[in-house]
Image (spheres, rainbow, N blue to C red):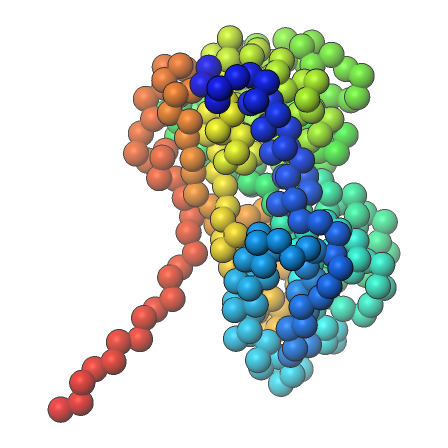
Length: 311
């Protein structure tokens, strides 16, 4: 199995990967706000390079929409916040403002845990673009990798149990609670050819990760990871979204709200790319096709305006 350097190093990297997925790209507690003007604000965390890159790119994508925001009459709620990361989302929730909130770079589990107690009327003004890949895209990727319909298993902890209805029928779903033996859970999945991993800290914690990776490898079960970093440390493949992909989707949700007054429901990333661990694929005797490697859904490129010479 193609672990980088040592198993210990791989597990340490994977632990950071899990923490990052749950924390929404590792963005920390919000201290400042970057005022957008035009009745919108981007709530940021620290002043790190990643945070600046997200905020600067997002600002450019939102500006065309909110330049005309004050002329729109469809919305009752005239302030929109974009909360980058989970703690920024906590900050907006604590403000109790009469506003609309789009959360980004926060996992679906954390988003649900933070918003589940909101009153229904206020909850209707919150939406999100989750940090982790869409399960449907991951399952499609598994089919492309194996070149046929494949039996996929998934382990859901308490924080990811809400995904069960979306997976049942296509996936062998096994429940896991703290204190369970991960080996016993894996033994119930021997008929599965691949494991769909979710960024669930109860399941993919430092105590369990080694057993999960080694057990699936010995059984020739490919792991469809939940981040590009996870693929580097031993997962077979994953779909993943760049910062620009997430920001494009956030901007589209905001533009639709401005135009119609309707807020889209929380959703997984729509735009994505694919990364494959070629060494793991060879170990699993998989011949990865160009179709699998290029599996993606990319944002449309802006139409270039070509100036023509006057006669």
